[in-house]
Amino acid sequence: MRNQLMYLRDVVTLSLDRMKCVGCGTCLLVCPRAVLSLTNGKVEIADRDACMECGACARNCPAEALQVRSGVGCATAVINSMLGRKKSSCCCTIDSEG
Amino acid sequence: MIQTPVGPVPQVSSSLTWGDRLGTFKARWGIGRMHYTIEPGLYALGKPDEQSPILVTANYKMSFDKLRETLPGWNAWILVLDTGGINVWCASGKGTFGTMELVGRIKSSSLEKIVSHRELILPQLSGPGVAAHLVKKLSGFKVNYGPIRSADLPTFLDDGLKAAPEMRLKTFTIWERVVLIPMELIEAFKAGLIVILIFFLLAFLGNSGGIWTNSLRHGFLAAVAILAAILAGAVLTPLLLPWLPGRAFSLKGLTLGVLAVAMLMVFGWNGWVTSTGRLEILAWVFLIPTASAYLAMNFTGASTYTSLSGVKKEMRWALPLQIGAGIVGMILWLGSNFIA
Image (tube, rainbow over all chains, first blue to last red):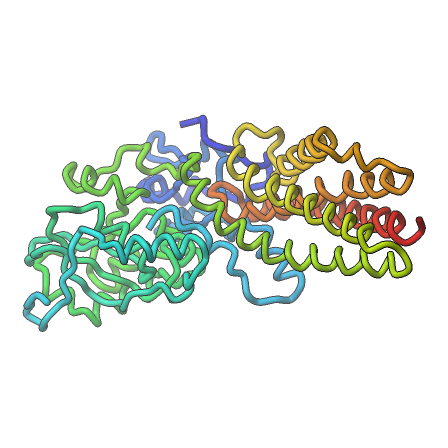
């Protein structure tokens, strides 16, 4: 599990309020990067740097315990928005999985 | 068509035709990919009944084809959401593969009259757009997140909707990177061709009183250099990604760009070295690695593990450096052309 490709260290905006966590585990199911783990009925951030801020965990948390400024890590889209262009066709080149 | 209590539903098979495969191939090369869609709504795979599972996907035809292709011999309902012809992962990030679209499509397809159960199977990668607990609340249907890769679907269904941990990990294998290269190439070529034309034009302008073959030589050198940069940044960087040094994509592209310059030095550039030639070569020593780093940086969007915060952090130092090195390189190149 730990031999996945890793991007920059200490940049991710993911945060967790363990007090709010109800331990349902849905976030573990949707996370495609194995960032989270469940111990003693509460979720933990086990591998923060692996997070790609897709926002799936926060979206699926019924207790709003997880927060993340979600977005697509795409330089082309960032450049396009800097240039004031609305079109960001960038992410749509990913066809790997249906 | 298959008959249901709410009327006929189109029936599809799990085997793809040559037309389907050609469509996938074309979409990978960017031909008509924005119009490669199927009609949203409910489809019958095989001969499903009221007990059959419901699989949800996007109306990008490649997503739909990949899904049904993995389920030969299965009977299932396929609910296709309107994502504007965008694949699941991108559409969920944009929110078009989202809670409201799903709830609306469940209602408009009268799912509750077609099946007796209240369960849906969604691709795991739709998680950024769909809130499972809200879907349950608004439609009564329970969302089960399936595996990431549709190839794992049969196992997931056989194991009672359980996915092994590795089925939940988004990989970025060499093959997953290879299939992205055509799109990277097409995009890079579009820009590269214009840039090459500009270099030819400048080469002729700079040599207005001089010899035509000289201009051609400058232009030809520019074309070779730019193609080398594209090869380094848009082909080799995606291919060799895990083995290139550094975490920032710009750094990975820079490494290969420097290597490309070294290769060009070895194979023939030294034959052209004159006093002007040195300046011109120095220009390309700046420009090739810069272009390669820039192209590599743009591959963050196609990669499957970069965060927006990370990309912004990388760009804060990488983009100014790329612009600076690009300007220095251009000044050197113009100098080599116009002064000498």
